Each structure stands twice: as C-alpha cells, then as structure tokens.
Amino acid sequence: MHEAIETLKRSALAELSTSGDLQALEHFRISYLARKGQIAELFDKLKDAPPEQKPALGKALNEMRRSIESQFEEKKARLETGQKKKSIHLDLTLPGLRPWVGSKHPITQTLDEIKRIFLGMGFQVETGPEIEDDYHNFGALNFPPDHPARDMQDTFFISNDVVLRTHTSPVQIRVMETQKPPIRALIPGRVYRNEAISARSYCLFHQVEGLYVDTNVTFAELKGTLVAFAKQFYGSSLKYRFRPSFFPFTEPSAEMDITCFLCKAKGCRVCKNTGWLEILGCGMVDPNVFQSVNYDPEMYTGYAFGMGIERIAMLRYGIDDIRILFENDIRFLSQF
Ligand code: DAH
Image (cartoon, rainbow, N blue to C red):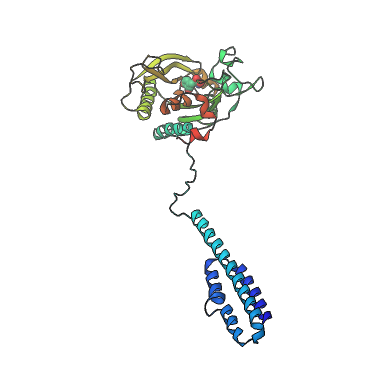
C-alpha cells in the first residue's frame, strides 16, 4: 500500500503541475481531493490493512494528502492573482489607441487651393527643371548680361552656365519652346536664392507662375483674371490695386496689392501700417521674350504673373517664421 500512496502522490503532483488554469485546477480537485476522489478512495483501503501497519500507513496517507493539498492551494492562489493581473491588461473600457494620420503640408494645401482656382479658369499645370541653364533662367527672359539678379549674392551657380533656378519664369520659355498658342499654363515649383537665412527669407521657397498667350490678349484680361483669383482666394470683400513695376520679361509690368486681411486695412505690423499687402508681380509678355521662342510678336500677345507661396501660407495660417515650413517637425505639421 505504501507503493500505492507513492504512485498516487506522483501522478497527482504531475497533473497539478500541468493544470494551467482554474478550470483545470477544479478538475484536479474533483479527481483527487473531493470526498469521492482518489485520495479518499485510498484512505478507504486503510481499514483492510493489517492492524500493525495501520499507524504507519495512516501517517503516510495523511502526509501525502497534506502535501498535495498545500501544493494545490499554492497553485490556486497563483492562478487567481495571475488572472487578476491579466484582467488589467484586458480592460476593455480603456479608450483605443488612435493611429497617426498624415496631413498635407501647409504649402501643399495653399498650392492646391491656387491650382483649383486657376484650373477652373482653363489653365493647365506645367512643370520644369529646378536645375536650369543661364539662358532659360535669365537670357531668354530678357535679362541683360549684367543684370544684378545674376549676382553671386542672389543666385546659386552650379557652373558658369548652370544655376538653381531663381524663379519659375524659365518654365514659361520651356512651355513656349514646345507648344504653340493658345497657351494657358500654371507653373508651380521650388525656386532657390542665395539669401541670408532669417525668419523672413530662406534659401529655397515656392512660386506659382501663370502664362497666357493668344491673339489679342489684353492687360484688362490680366487684371480681370487676377482679381477673380484674389476674390476667390482671399474673400470677395477685398479691395485691390495695381502699381506700375518693372520686370525684364514683361512690358508693361505691375504688382498687385490687396487690402490687408489681417487688420482689415487698419494698419498692422504685417502690412507695415500701410493697410496693403503685395501679393504678386505681373505684366504683358515682352516682345523680346516672344522673339527668343520664335513667336511672332506682331501676331501674339500674352500676360504672365508670378507669386510666392510661403508668404501667402504664412499670412493664411499665422506662421511667423519661414524656416519652420522646411523643418518637417511633426509637432508643427500635425496642426494642419
Ligand atoms: N519671376 C518674378 C520673381 O521671381 C515674379 C514674376 C513677376 C513672374 C512678373 C512673372 C511676372 O511671370 O510677369 O520675382
């Protein structure tokens, strides 16, 4: 019978150690520890044992039961606290983790809005290279060879003849070299200037250029188009003015101002107390430019305009340092 006690103990402890959850443990309890379980069954056999062996067998039986019971209790306690811990991990009332969602850069958003308005007026998007030759960036646009814009101070030269484009106007030339009028091109892109970097200027920024060429294009059409754009973009209540200006590639040239929408033209730091904001340069395409692309200046006229995007986006979103637009800091970008 000693052997039977030993065997039962071994099989009980082995089963206990593989009981991985409370359900298995309950199964174990019924099988071994319950009133009709295997341990009780063995106790029953004690009455048939020879009387002189009974004390020792009783002692062995009791020890076996105590040892199994205590390991059972220990395991039960462990599984119960373990389950409590688990239930913390599975708190279904906790709010979910929100996945990161990207957003469009404020420059892209501004560009998209400008494109939407001009595409609605029949313009078509064109693009050109950011590494440009001197001829397209300057010469064909009627810049004289000694023009100050070619100065090392303003232009990044890659070689004597190759530059990082300083404006999107060279794409006007590339479009006219490959297409015949009528042309209605909208040209967005990055441009580069060798400027001292500050809160107001950066070595790289974006422009949008417009070009319209056909027979009988007039300055009135230029004004009408730009006013229609400005009212859609900045709001229909704005006032505007065109001031005479100079660009080598347009004649006559102008700059367009709108009433400052930040102070409602009362005068603030941004409009330098004038109530006006300059938003773009424009003019009628200079006949010399037509000649450089072999368009007959007697037959065709056209207008062009160009505007910087950073300034517009900064005014729109109240951003006071241009450099932050190029840092790609998630804390900034996720606000748009
Ligand atoms: N390219 C000029 C600049 O970078 C902007 C500009 C002015 C473009 C007048 C034009 C224009 O097309 O007609 O300052």
